[in-house]
Amino acid sequence: MEATDPKLQSTPRTESPETSAEVLATFAEIGEEVNASLDLDEVLAHTAVLIKRHIDYELFGVLMADEEGVYLTHRFALGYPPGLAENLRVPIGQGITGTAAATGHPVRVSDVSQDPRYINAIDSVRSELAVPLMFRGKCVGVLDIQSQHLDYFTKDQQRILALLASRLAVAIENARLFQKVRAQAETLLVLNEVSREISSILDVEELLRHAAEQVKRVIDYQILSIMLYDEEQHIFWHRVDVKHGQRVQGKMRVAASEGLVGAAATLREPVLVPDVTKDERYLMINPETRSELAIPMMHKGKVIGVLDLESPQLNYFNADHVQTLSILPSNLAVSLENARLYEQVAKDEARLDREVQAAKRIQGALLRPVPTDDYGLDVAARYLSAREVCGDLYEFLRYGPQQLGFALGDVSGKGTAAALYGAVAIGIMRSLAPQKLQPAEMLQQMNHLVGERRIEGRFMTACFATWQKGRQKLRVANAGQSQPLLYKDGRCERIDLTGFPLGIFEETQYDEWSVTLQAGDILVFHSDGIAETTNGEGQFFGTTRLLRFIEQHHEMTAAEMADQILREVDWFTQSAPLSDDRTLVIAKVK
Image 1 (cartoon, rainbow, N blue to C red):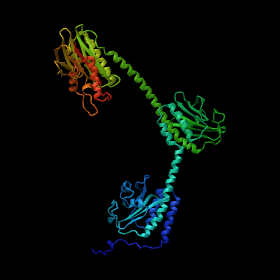
Image 2 (image 1 turned 90 degrees about the horizontal axis):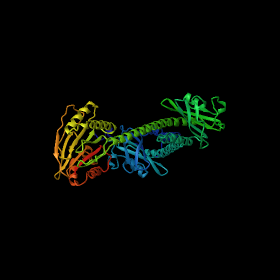
Image 3 (image 1 turned 90 degrees about the vertical axis):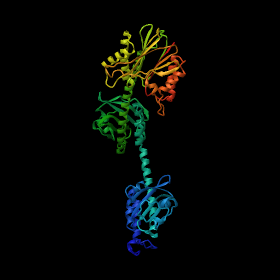
Image 4 (image 1 turned 60 degrees about the vertical axis):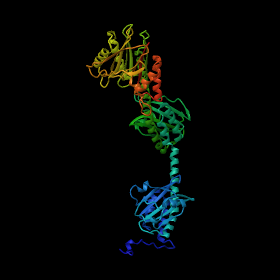
């Protein structure tokens, strides 16, 4: 195809030293549009249409500078692919539009492919004209048009757009000023601010007091009352009364159908009375009152109270006051309901806390102290609860002056339910104590009795041991509890005993292991809350660490060792909150 083919040539534009009458008419029309409207989007849309009459662009955009003067973003765009203009941010000083903004001068590019400043967002673009929108020497944005033809835009068009840009810059600033003034007016009304503030208050008395103060910022009232509805007695109780800026003790209650307050509640809409002397519904409480505005506070279709304003001036309240205060009471009603709910929850939590504390004291009383009788053992027991009450337990059974039984258990789950289950287990163990059962038989009998009281999803692990002082013989059995540890002959090792937890299978047999101990030997029962505790890096404290500690500190007393183990675990977790109960029973042969 020959180069002279007109389809391949750019469309020439004839430059004229004078602006045509038609262009001037268009310019005047745009000026009128700019001066007549404060809606910037409307002005820009109409401007784009009028410019299109004289400059057949493919892409049209008005980019605005951000407040920091760093980026340009599109406020209005035509011809761009969906989502492109909205997401395009041009740094000021870069690209064609960024250069125009930075220099304050128009930039006309005949062939964008030859201009290194061009940001290639659309491949079909060949030429571009960007004109800065200057206001009082500051660039507030850029008017940008683009074409698919080479050398498309002329100097005349550049001059026309430069003149138009000055008008657009004024329009932009006027629109911004208008928006600012409107925002200031909204700020003076402070409705949004008041709503946010009162929504964060959960104490009813504080909320009502704060609401009275905030209403004063909206309307300069002389007398205010906030009354809350009592559904049981069908009356409104005065909760806040303010008269000439001072809290006063007003009439304590008003019948649900009495006065203008009752009318507002019955009608479920504001009641505005310019002259109370001419309204038969008016009930005189303050002799100086001449006008009154009562607005019901609604929540989910129910009246929960009334906001009542009074003034000694006739016709003091108007429709604007009604509109303003119709918003506030609805927000106040929601906040009141939230505050009431919070108060109820707080009361329930306080009651629950009292019950939990009572359960904690009862559980503490259930756990027997370490025996003081001389069984030839130095014994210590410790427990730390992850919650208010503990799901772990320990128990000591005196089988006589020469024989002692002791146990450590761990109920599945935590909290009150686990503690109650543990209390049942202790009761069962004590009921079996007169039989002086040895470990395997004790666990078998407990499993049978616990199974008879089976609770879905609940079971219990336990270790039980008996110690015979004269023979210095230890017997141990395990029902799914962490394997007990034994320090003997300078080494600490696990006692390899396993078994099913109590309360899962009815017919279960348990292995029993026995050993003769010497002075200095140590038996350690520990719940999984010791070895399975993790630190911030997810590492377990581990049984190995516990074994090594016992070997290194075997000369400690039982109490010293128990306390130090708990301190070591706490240090390992950097005093993080407990995720599981931690319980220890340590017996050291004297």
